[in-house]
Image 1 (tube, protein in one colour):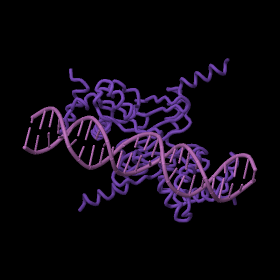
Image 2 (spheres, chains in turn green, blue, purple, orange):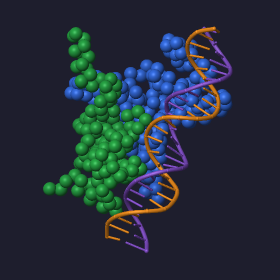
Image 3 (cartoon, chains in turn purple, brown, cyan, orange):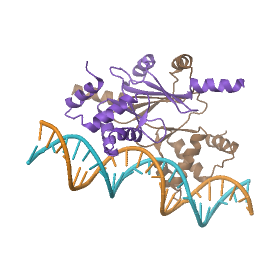
Image 4 (cartoon, chains in turn red, orange, yellow, blue):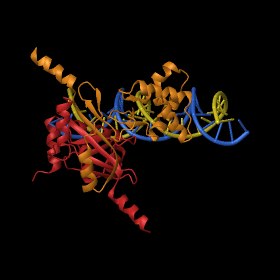
Length: 153
Length: 153
DNA sequence: GTGCGTGCAAAGATTTTGCATACTA
DNA sequence: TAGTATGCAAAATCTTTGCACGCAC
């Protein structure tokens, strides 16, 4: 069976890019941390564990390349750093995020949710939507439960 | 009648902050460019026109203060800089943005749109929503019309 | 050998901080 | 006069770039 890495490799090749060892190591880190929203520095440190000779600039260049190819999304939660999020294969839409303002956790919502809203925006604002970013800020279920516990004590 | 500046002044005073001339100049620039999504540097240059002695650090500190007080929202469209957007008074929700990937224009949507979606998220993910960010990326109506013109030629 | 990719270090860009000074209640 | 707020410059952060070297076809 064709693996995710293989498909990414093909995608690179189709645009005359190579999947070098450094690029592969970077992609593997992203695959292994799909749930985390890693910063470039995070990726760098993780790649370095297995390939200590890699340079930070290479990680930046790889992430930029993957962003261009739509393999990853570059996202920004308001802290000073960019984070990189692997796109779901075949996903028509970018997933959404729930950012907890108490513990900082970031959860993902894969469901679409915005279908109706997009229809309205395209019609009423005459805007051709290509992509979207939706992030909710609030209290996650874990912190919510924790607070309940405290209340009870 | 009480002006917008007056109300912001009161809000500052209620938290023991002063509306100094520099802060007032900064707020005035934001009021005069409400549609514009200015970066800190933009604000600095505009404030400097009327108050040349102001320092960039003061602008940053003022914008940070206004963000804390929820007078402005700090937003980020993916270019490296933070932009500052005056909150609509009395608006229950932060407005949304339409970013044109062709001309870079940023339009605003004041309508809510997310009521139903928020209900679903709060219920199904047990997440207490405090705020949200929704940005659509695509082709604005101006570029869309422009492209039509070209097609016709 | 040509060209792409890399590592390193330096440069750039944006934002924050330290500190002496100025202002205000 | 005590406490804020400011301006300047330096520092800190994150990211990009220049350049010489290395590797693959």
